[in-house]
Length: 255
Ligand SMILES: C[S@@+](CC[C@H](N)C(=O)[O-])C[C@H]1O[C@@H](n2cnc3c(N)ncnc32)[C@H](O)[C@@H]1O
Image (cartoon, rainbow, N blue to C red):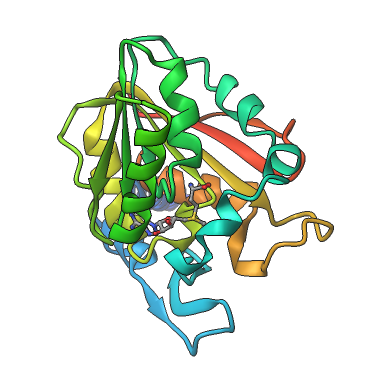
């Protein structure tokens, strides 16, 4: 056989292989960079559906957002049985706070956690954020009754925690994140308010467990919380499942 066609065929094959490799590399780069961005952004857009019973009909990363608990239900937050049902002291001790830490309790309600946190940061502060002025008024009463002076009530907005940038060591959200109507914007504000290396901790009723008798949209799975915090640029540290009914999920802002 003539050598020329053989050489031409071999060159054609290597050329095709090389082209294939370039195409694969291009696709990979496209996925990792610019071409991928619109896809990622599309995933973070809110979707709208017809609202289910406990939901607002707005969907974020596959999860329908729950209704905000009104201040009319505040007594439920302060029910005496909560100490046994949720072990709040164990929850806040697991945060391993430093006495000088500045902690934001976001969705603080009547201050059930903020007042407990205050004793763990005697030289620091608790910024207790809520969007309902009525909740903050109940919290003020509680702070006065207990003579607590290192908790500062903060009126937030649905899409803004109203915290100064780089001002907090830890953001805690207990039974609150699932009802933020603007979770993406809230997390942007929270991440901006954290110091580098600062932590975010969420306590959410375990959605994986049907024995946790809480309305469906007021519970969250570990996988869903991780998905939403990853979208906010946070790194998962650990999940503590030692509480009776809630996941305690720890995340960190990159240093
Ligand atoms: C179920 S309550 C939990 C209160 C408190 N963390 C506790 O465990 O006792 C949820 C609270 O989140 C508040 N909330 C809802 N959306 C919020 C937002 N975007 N920013 C701050 N607070 C919000 C509600 O007003 C409500 O007081």
